[in-house]
Image (cartoon, rainbow, N blue to C red; front, side):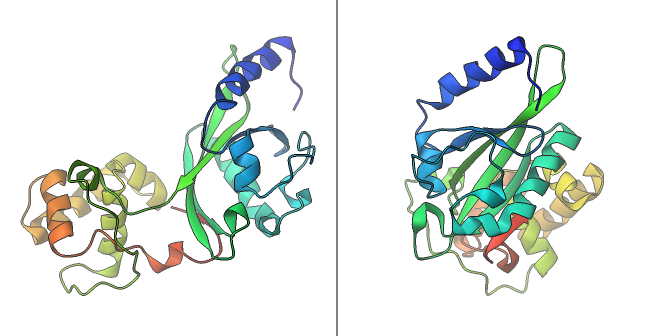
Length: 228
């Protein structure tokens, strides 16, 4: 990415902020080359602090997740092309762990003062099944499961239920499925009718009662990058 002085100063402001964050954060340019990662990002990617990441692409990192480079770069491209936040679930051996761990990763476009996209910011946070209702009730998350004992909802509806419990809006869900917002609103209305509820809060309570809060679509826990 060719950056003039203003762009460099603009990125520096982001870097100063990220330096003090405890979650993994990083910056990449328009060619999917890394510009910056904070210490938490080095730990997350299991990258030695001595490894110089600036100008390096994902496939050249000394880590096993580099095998997902194509999907990670696709994440960059979708963010740059849509000029909007794009969310994925990254499932790999993060932090050098021996077990697969799903993390939610978001990428957001960076715009300069001219409104031009000059790169992307990425972050990652642990995926769990806590809804806002769990926090209010101080309830610990339960074990995620790909199976659920219900005949009320179809598999396709359960996928939408999962996204609803992540507090995604109808517009965000519509973007994922590449359908109209009205289509998703109709599906949500149908789900509410089946559950005999009239609001998201009531639906969250319904899901807790019927053990749906710990459901996760099986496609999201395979090793790799899943666009949700």
